Length: 293
Image 1 (cartoon, rainbow, N blue to C red):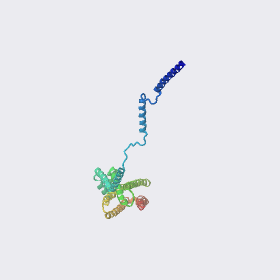
Image 2: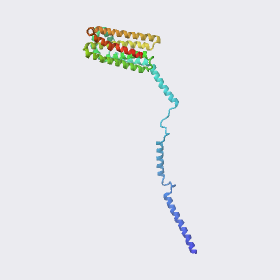
Image 3: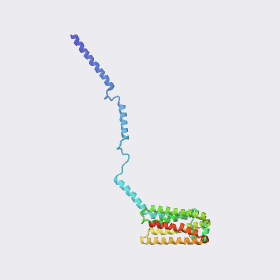
Image 4: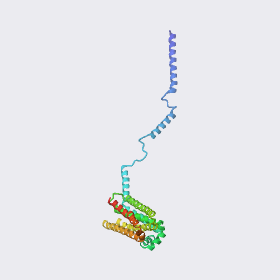
């Protein structure tokens, strides 16, 4: 009996020792709380987690937000610059036209006196026409461009108070309109030449168009400078003076063209009537209609 009890106790003791060693071995293998051998793996996981959080963080601010007063100040600065640009439209335009005129006079100093002389003297007209290659020289083209821009500037000063448009935008529209009207007139004159075979007369008259347009542009530019910076009462009188002068030049141009091409137009009066309706009367009626609308 004693031997049985002794064997049983020895069996229990041996069994407990085996279980303890086995559990220690298992703990050494799969213990989830042991970090001594997993520090490098944990560091890599933490690094990847931080990078993903930084890449996908919806609350991350990549710029410095503007304060309300900063936004208001920037808007006020933009509005002030636009207002100054509109307010100084006459000054900027006058300076630009003066620079263009200075470039023209630098290229050929006696161009403007030559235009005045050719417009009123027939013998000077022939020589000046040959000198300027029938109106195809760069100097005369630049001068005619100056005249068209000066006319657009004059019309802008008149219409800007009645039309709710930016003066720069209105000036651009009028400049394109005048240039387009002259280009259309140029091609229509060429068409008239092809139909009725009046090459010499058309070339002669086309050159006179340049001369009279330049004269009108110079006069309108001078009057526009005073209109832009004169009191309203004086400016209104200058506007009527400029319009009257423009009508006078237009009549003088028609009369001079009629005298210079009298034989051709009397032989073929239908051509003269067709020209007056298409090239002289129609543009004025369109301009009046535009102003009324």
